[in-house]
Every structure is written in structure tokens, then in C-alpha cells.
Length: 280
Image (cartoon, rainbow, N blue to C red; front, top):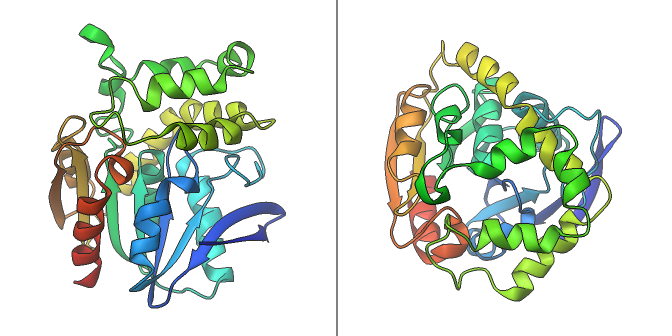
């Protein structure tokens, strides 16, 4: 993909931009960057114009005004798509990117044509319950860690790769070979940049604000087509259950053999499903 940079309201936004056809915005989540979409984005570019940004404060994008709630990040991305000349577009969001994607769809329902929500539970509609401790560490332990102000910035500086390996190759991953050492190095390099861990924490510290925003937005359910992807060994049908509270046209997609990191653990299946969904 071709990496580009632009400035939105004074903030530097990095994004990959390639392909031709109807535009689709790909949004990564926590512990990752736009690098997540290296396989899926390339495949979609054969039929779509693909825009894959680094979320605010992560990768090569600036922190802007320091607000990391989904609505604030979505507003910046809506402005990015306007700057690129895309009035209407599809949105695909994984993890935190799914939360941002919902906020964007609710913020500009006349602009978003399709929304794919990947292995995420919306704050206010299931996400909080996933923080509750469970046996064998199968709960969002890192969410609580990240949400405490100053903790990850202080404790994990210089240990980014070890932390990411615990998350990206741990209990949330079914296909342990999906993320290679080179992939892990790419993510670790990004999160070792000054301010990256603080930005990551900022996203989790904004979850209660997100829940409030989502409950307001849910009063007007999305009517656009929504595909809710869940990993067979992760969220599973929970993604669709969460989205059904805020959208009226939801398709459930279970990604076989995958844990949380769907575009990397089973890219062929994700590509096939996305192409079919976006074509309708």
C-alpha cells in the first residue's frame, strides 16, 4: 500500500491509500496499527479504494487534542474521508476500530454505506462485562491495566515487545503462528514511540465516555447493513449480539479457527466474507 500523510485540524494523520472502486475505510484496534490490514487491504484493493489510517496517537498519527473517546476519533476520520474526496464509504473496524467505526456510522449515517464490526463488544452493550475476572485469565485483564492512569506508561516503557507478545500470542489467539516475529517487531516498534503507550491507555480510559455516547446513539438504530464478525474462539456471536442493540440489519459471521486477531488468524475467510458483504 502507499503510505500518505495529511493534517486534519492541526493533527498529523498517517494512512495507507491504494486501489480503485468504492472506498472502504479500515480501522485497526488496540496493540496494533494500520499494519494489521496488510493482507486484507491488499486483497480488497482489487475492487475497492482502500484507506487504512493509524488511529489517533498510534502508529505514525499524532495525538491531536488528546481526546481518545470513539466519537472524537471518528470525527477526525470523517474529516479525513472528506479531505480525500470520499462522501460515501464503507467502514470495517476491528477491536477498538470497531468502536470507532460504530461511532462514525452513528455520527454520519448518511455517509457510511456498510459497516463491518470485528470481534468487539460495544461499551454500554457488553464491553464492561468482559472486564470481569474469569478463570485462566480469559477476560480483558489488559483493559483494566491500561485504564489506570500512568500505569502502562511507567511500568511497560522499554518492555513493549514483551507486553505485546503476551496479548498477541496469548490466550486470545487461536492460531499462534498467525503473528510472526517480524509482525511482532513491527507492532513493538510502533508502541515504543514516545506517547504511544499513553495514547493506548487513553483509549481505555475513555470507555465510560464511550458507553454514555453509545447509549445515546442507540436511540436511533443504524439501518445500514452491518456484518458482525466474531472469532470462533473469541467473541463468537457476542459481536452480533452487541451490535443488535444498536443496529437493525445485522449479519452474524463466525470466523473459523480464529481467536481475536481475525484479519491475521484467518485472512482468507475474512477477505472472502468482506468482499461478499461489501458487494451487496
